[in-house]
Amino acid sequence: MTIAPTPVPLRDLVDLTRTVAAEVRAGRHPVHFDADDRWSLRLSSDPYTDVWLISWTQEQSTELHDHAGSLGALTVVSGVVTERFWTGTSGLRERRLRGGRGIGFPVGHVHDVVNTQPEPAVTVHAYSPPLTAMGYYEVDGAGALRRVRTVLTDEPEPAR
Image (cartoon, rainbow, N blue to C red):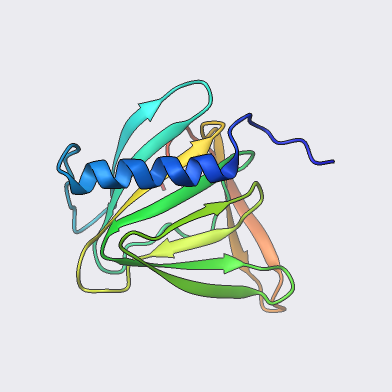
């Protein structure tokens, strides 16, 4: 039996990001774009969940990271982002996420999200429990995943 770090099921986090993405598309939350850095805005926070709105211009990425002890979910509001994720057995894989697509990721999921397209992208992210740290990784010459640093943070855009 696996004990989750939160009473919020992963599917509920995905549903939450889809609901908030619809609110963003309806104009209920402002979105800004910054050509130099990803822009983010915390939309809500409680003891169990944080919800963030993030914008991406071309080639902006998160770096390969995890969310420490938090479950996560994201839904693409508009545009396209590419998720590169660590599988363990097959190394890094990638998938394109288009507007309307939502995904969830368990504790320990290591990924990088990037906008490779010329058009900006907007995503909604939710974490449960709220973020407290993020681990950053690289794939070494032997193809193994190696943690390079950990950042204590309560936001998905920690200072680099």
